[in-house]
Length: 142
Image (tube, rainbow, N blue to C red):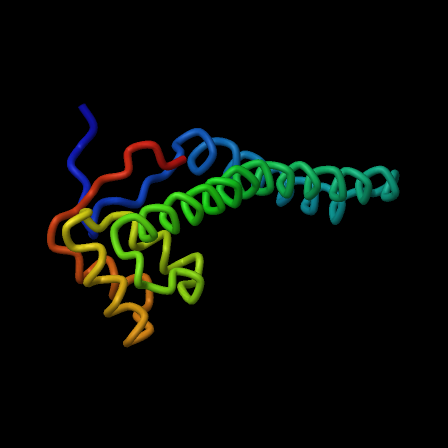
């Protein structure tokens, strides 16, 4: 069973991406630069290796970013539907994506009041999360 989530513990890291791929490709970029500066000949090849190393690092970062953006869009849709069902008078269209993402952790019982407060006070995502009394965990987050 996953560990219980709270406002302080809901963020997650992907161990393979954060602790293996990104460090390895970052070291690869640094090593390519060091080798290029120490090269006595073949500088063109070494410069190309820097470019390729940097492209590999960027591809790892983008591989992580794309599914997160898609997931944010799905969360935005889910929360707009949830707000429409639980707080039909609220104007969910005025909420930012970041606010909707933070609101997903609010229980159904407290969502209408929290949406109204967020709209009235333009709460930032951290303030929304800190205002949640009954945390609704999201174990499916990538």
